[in-house]
Image 1 (cartoon, one colour):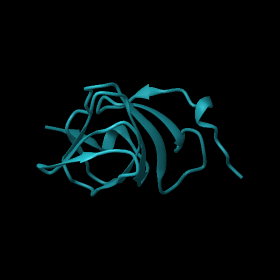
Image 2 (cartoon, one colour):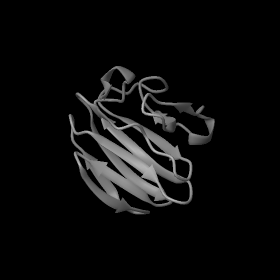
Image 3 (cartoon, helix red, strand yellow):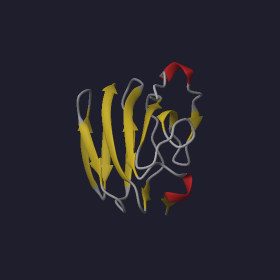
Length: 118
């Protein structure tokens, strides 16, 4: 059985500029097909617009509000919202006036090598 405590995971900055804590991924568990991380953006902060060639992503907003953009379509997001980001879709999330904290699930697991920028 694998049980990881989020507070024990060291935060790091991903290729897109968000600060994340890997809750379960290939670095800390015998994960094969998905990954789970907590991401945080400071007020007014944004990820760099990017896409993933292989990974489908799910964002689940925990705290704060922001603006989610996927392939040119934008929508306000807040606590309780779940966002589907298909593989190959250009996307960016921007925090509002407070920290934006969300869960990010990737299948296959997140990899820096699968993150592409303009």
